[in-house]
Image 1 (tube, rainbow, N blue to C red):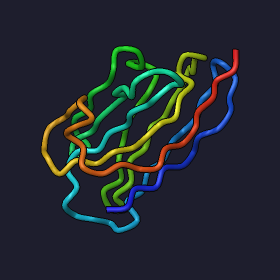
Image 2: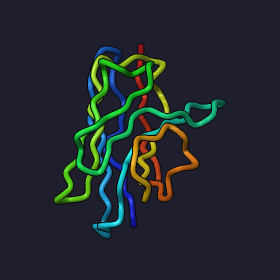
Image 3: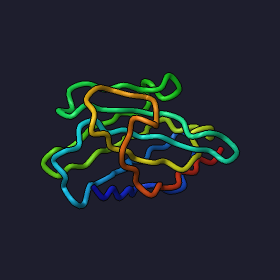
Amino acid sequence: VQLQASGGGLVQAGGSLRLSCADSARTSRISSMGWFRQAPGKEREFVAAIDRRGTRERYADSVKGRFTISRDNAKTTVFLQMNSLKPEDTAVYYCAASLATGLYDASSVYDYWGQGTQVTVSS
């Protein structure tokens, strides 16, 4: 499994960004995938998760209604569409993959991590 995240950048408050994370190895063992973020001086926190088939999703309360997670299993890629961005969304965003089924908000459940992509939202 080799996760590579992309799509971060600088955007004004209220704007949108779409993050992508591809498993370049196209590993079939991956089950759930998720996104986490870490702001300066803060712990890494859960953002969203999606199950293997892409039919069930889970979101942190802070992003519910603004962010949407999806996946393309043919390309073993997970996306995070972020709308109505706020300055407090500024963080490094990490994608993660788990071999376990289910939707998890605990980082310890995830087996593989991407390198992170910076998202900065200006006010």
